[in-house]
Image (cartoon, rainbow, N blue to C red; front, side, top):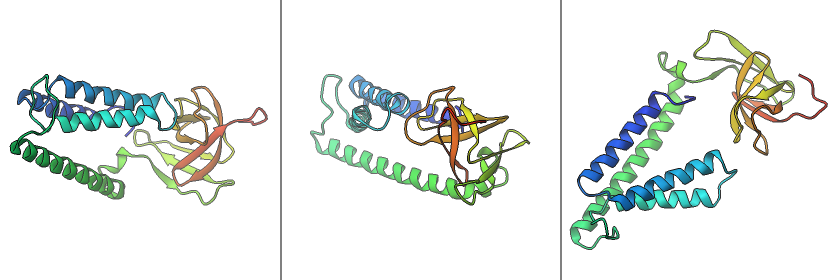
Length: 216
Protein backbone atom coordinates (compact mmCIF):
# COMPACT_ATOMS: atom_id res chain seq x y z
CA UNK A 1 0.00 0.00 0.00
CA UNK A 2 1.44 3.44 -0.89
CA UNK A 3 2.29 5.94 1.81
CA UNK A 4 2.37 5.37 5.56
CA UNK A 5 -0.86 3.89 6.89
CA UNK A 6 -2.15 1.17 9.18
CA UNK A 7 0.48 -1.46 8.23
CA UNK A 8 3.28 1.00 8.93
CA UNK A 9 1.74 2.00 12.26
CA UNK A 10 1.36 -1.63 13.31
CA UNK A 11 4.99 -2.29 12.36
CA UNK A 12 6.21 0.66 14.47
CA UNK A 13 4.14 -0.47 17.47
CA UNK A 14 5.43 -4.06 17.19
CA UNK A 15 9.01 -2.82 16.91
CA UNK A 16 8.58 -0.62 20.01
CA UNK A 17 7.05 -3.50 21.99
CA UNK A 18 9.87 -5.90 21.10
CA UNK A 19 12.62 -3.38 21.78
CA UNK A 20 10.99 -2.12 24.99
CA UNK A 21 10.44 -5.60 26.39
CA UNK A 22 14.06 -6.56 25.69
CA UNK A 23 15.25 -3.38 27.40
CA UNK A 24 13.09 -3.89 30.49
CA UNK A 25 14.36 -7.43 31.12
CA UNK A 26 18.00 -6.42 30.58
CA UNK A 27 18.46 -8.15 27.23
CA UNK A 28 18.92 -4.90 25.29
CA UNK A 29 21.44 -2.30 26.46
CA UNK A 30 22.34 1.02 24.90
CA UNK A 31 25.06 -0.52 22.71
CA UNK A 32 22.64 -2.91 20.97
CA UNK A 33 19.97 -0.22 20.66
CA UNK A 34 22.39 2.29 19.12
CA UNK A 35 23.71 -0.34 16.69
CA UNK A 36 20.17 -1.24 15.66
CA UNK A 37 19.16 2.37 14.98
CA UNK A 38 22.43 3.11 13.16
CA UNK A 39 21.80 0.08 10.96
CA UNK A 40 18.24 1.14 10.21
CA UNK A 41 19.44 4.67 9.42
CA UNK A 42 22.09 3.37 7.02
CA UNK A 43 19.52 1.19 5.27
CA UNK A 44 17.20 4.18 4.85
CA UNK A 45 20.08 6.20 3.39
CA UNK A 46 20.87 3.34 1.01
CA UNK A 47 17.24 3.06 -0.11
CA UNK A 48 16.28 6.74 -0.45
CA UNK A 49 19.56 8.61 -1.03
CA UNK A 50 22.30 6.45 -2.54
CA UNK A 51 21.77 4.60 -5.84
CA UNK A 52 22.25 0.84 -5.97
CA UNK A 53 23.51 -1.28 -3.09
CA UNK A 54 26.90 -0.44 -1.59
CA UNK A 55 28.81 0.19 1.60
CA UNK A 56 25.94 1.88 3.43
CA UNK A 57 23.61 -1.05 2.79
CA UNK A 58 26.20 -3.63 3.83
CA UNK A 59 27.08 -1.74 7.02
CA UNK A 60 23.39 -1.21 7.78
CA UNK A 61 22.59 -4.92 7.53
CA UNK A 62 25.68 -5.75 9.63
CA UNK A 63 24.70 -3.31 12.39
CA UNK A 64 21.10 -4.57 12.46
CA UNK A 65 22.22 -8.21 12.66
CA UNK A 66 24.74 -7.48 15.44
CA UNK A 67 22.17 -5.44 17.35
CA UNK A 68 19.51 -8.15 17.07
CA UNK A 69 21.84 -10.96 18.10
CA UNK A 70 23.20 -8.84 20.95
CA UNK A 71 19.67 -8.58 22.33
CA UNK A 72 19.51 -12.35 22.63
CA UNK A 73 22.19 -12.39 25.35
CA UNK A 74 21.89 -10.82 28.80
CA UNK A 75 24.89 -8.57 29.47
CA UNK A 76 25.88 -5.54 31.51
CA UNK A 77 25.97 -2.13 29.75
CA UNK A 78 29.79 -2.17 29.72
CA UNK A 79 30.11 -5.76 28.49
CA UNK A 80 30.31 -7.16 24.98
CA UNK A 81 27.21 -9.33 24.33
CA UNK A 82 28.91 -12.72 24.07
CA UNK A 83 27.58 -16.01 25.51
CA UNK A 84 29.78 -17.16 28.42
CA UNK A 85 27.56 -19.67 30.20
CA UNK A 86 25.38 -22.61 29.22
CA UNK A 87 22.32 -20.47 29.89
CA UNK A 88 23.62 -17.76 27.57
CA UNK A 89 24.13 -20.29 24.78
CA UNK A 90 20.65 -21.69 25.32
CA UNK A 91 19.18 -18.19 25.23
CA UNK A 92 21.11 -17.40 22.05
CA UNK A 93 20.06 -20.62 20.31
CA UNK A 94 16.41 -20.10 21.29
CA UNK A 95 16.54 -16.54 19.98
CA UNK A 96 18.10 -17.62 16.69
CA UNK A 97 15.41 -20.25 16.23
CA UNK A 98 12.75 -17.65 16.97
CA UNK A 99 14.23 -15.18 14.48
CA UNK A 100 14.50 -17.87 11.81
CA UNK A 101 10.92 -18.99 12.42
CA UNK A 102 9.69 -15.40 12.28
CA UNK A 103 11.52 -14.75 9.01
CA UNK A 104 10.19 -17.96 7.49
CA UNK A 105 6.68 -17.05 8.60
CA UNK A 106 7.06 -13.59 7.05
CA UNK A 107 8.14 -15.09 3.70
CA UNK A 108 5.20 -17.50 3.69
CA UNK A 109 2.72 -14.78 4.68
CA UNK A 110 4.06 -12.39 2.03
CA UNK A 111 3.73 -15.11 -0.63
CA UNK A 112 0.17 -15.93 0.45
CA UNK A 113 -0.84 -12.25 0.45
CA UNK A 114 0.67 -11.63 -2.99
CA UNK A 115 -1.13 -14.69 -4.36
CA UNK A 116 -4.55 -14.50 -2.71
CA UNK A 117 -5.07 -10.87 -1.61
CA UNK A 118 -6.30 -9.71 -5.06
CA UNK A 119 -8.93 -12.50 -4.96
CA UNK A 120 -10.46 -11.51 -1.60
CA UNK A 121 -13.41 -9.15 -2.31
CA UNK A 122 -13.16 -6.89 0.75
CA UNK A 123 -9.33 -6.70 0.61
CA UNK A 124 -8.64 -6.51 -3.12
CA UNK A 125 -9.33 -2.76 -3.03
CA UNK A 126 -6.09 -2.24 -1.08
CA UNK A 127 -3.96 -2.78 -4.19
CA UNK A 128 -3.80 -1.53 -7.76
CA UNK A 129 -4.63 -4.26 -10.23
CA UNK A 130 -4.61 -4.05 -14.02
CA UNK A 131 -8.03 -4.22 -15.65
CA UNK A 132 -6.50 -5.03 -19.03
CA UNK A 133 -3.11 -6.70 -19.37
CA UNK A 134 -0.64 -5.47 -21.96
CA UNK A 135 0.06 -7.76 -24.89
CA UNK A 136 3.37 -6.39 -26.06
CA UNK A 137 5.94 -3.64 -25.85
CA UNK A 138 5.11 -1.51 -28.85
CA UNK A 139 1.68 0.09 -28.81
CA UNK A 140 0.67 -1.67 -25.59
CA UNK A 141 -2.03 -0.04 -23.53
CA UNK A 142 -2.87 -0.55 -19.87
CA UNK A 143 -5.98 0.48 -17.97
CA UNK A 144 -5.86 0.70 -14.16
CA UNK A 145 -8.50 1.57 -11.62
CA UNK A 146 -7.44 3.18 -8.35
CA UNK A 147 -8.94 1.60 -5.19
CA UNK A 148 -9.69 5.09 -3.86
CA UNK A 149 -11.31 6.37 -7.06
CA UNK A 150 -14.01 5.18 -9.39
CA UNK A 151 -12.30 6.54 -12.50
CA UNK A 152 -10.17 4.43 -14.84
CA UNK A 153 -6.91 5.75 -16.26
CA UNK A 154 -5.30 4.54 -19.47
CA UNK A 155 -1.72 4.90 -20.70
CA UNK A 156 0.24 3.33 -23.53
CA UNK A 157 3.80 2.95 -24.79
CA UNK A 158 5.04 6.28 -26.14
CA UNK A 159 3.04 8.49 -23.77
CA UNK A 160 5.05 11.36 -22.26
CA UNK A 161 4.48 12.57 -18.73
CA UNK A 162 6.09 14.21 -15.71
CA UNK A 163 7.67 12.58 -12.65
CA UNK A 164 5.78 13.40 -9.44
CA UNK A 165 8.08 11.61 -6.99
CA UNK A 166 11.77 10.82 -7.48
CA UNK A 167 12.15 7.46 -9.23
CA UNK A 168 14.65 5.32 -7.26
CA UNK A 169 13.82 3.53 -9.51
CA UNK A 170 10.09 3.24 -8.66
CA UNK A 171 7.72 6.13 -8.08
CA UNK A 172 4.78 7.99 -9.58
CA UNK A 173 4.38 9.98 -12.78
CA UNK A 174 1.54 11.98 -14.32
CA UNK A 175 0.39 11.31 -17.88
CA UNK A 176 -2.32 13.81 -18.70
CA UNK A 177 -4.91 13.39 -15.94
CA UNK A 178 -3.62 9.94 -14.97
CA UNK A 179 -1.21 9.30 -12.08
CA UNK A 180 0.58 5.98 -12.61
CA UNK A 181 3.10 3.90 -10.64
CA UNK A 182 6.18 3.61 -12.86
CA UNK A 183 9.72 2.23 -12.81
CA UNK A 184 12.69 4.09 -14.31
CA UNK A 185 14.96 2.25 -16.72
CA UNK A 186 18.56 3.14 -15.93
CA UNK A 187 19.39 6.24 -13.90
CA UNK A 188 17.25 7.67 -11.11
CA UNK A 189 14.97 10.48 -12.27
CA UNK A 190 14.14 13.53 -10.18
CA UNK A 191 10.78 15.16 -9.62
CA UNK A 192 9.62 17.24 -12.58
CA UNK A 193 11.60 15.26 -15.16
CA UNK A 194 9.75 14.53 -18.39
CA UNK A 195 9.58 10.80 -19.09
CA UNK A 196 8.30 8.56 -21.87
CA UNK A 197 6.76 5.10 -21.47
CA UNK A 198 8.96 2.52 -23.22
CA UNK A 199 7.53 -0.77 -21.92
CA UNK A 200 4.35 -2.10 -20.32
CA UNK A 201 4.25 -5.58 -18.80
CA UNK A 202 0.97 -6.23 -16.99
CA UNK A 203 0.76 -3.48 -14.37
CA UNK A 204 4.50 -2.69 -14.61
CA UNK A 205 5.10 0.54 -16.52
CA UNK A 206 8.73 1.26 -17.48
CA UNK A 207 9.81 4.80 -18.38
CA UNK A 208 12.94 6.65 -19.39
CA UNK A 209 13.86 10.32 -19.64
CA UNK A 210 12.09 11.92 -22.57
CA UNK A 211 14.22 13.29 -25.37
CA UNK A 212 13.82 16.85 -26.60
CA UNK A 213 11.92 15.67 -29.67
CA UNK A 214 9.25 13.72 -27.74
CA UNK A 215 5.74 15.11 -27.59
CA UNK A 216 3.00 14.62 -25.01
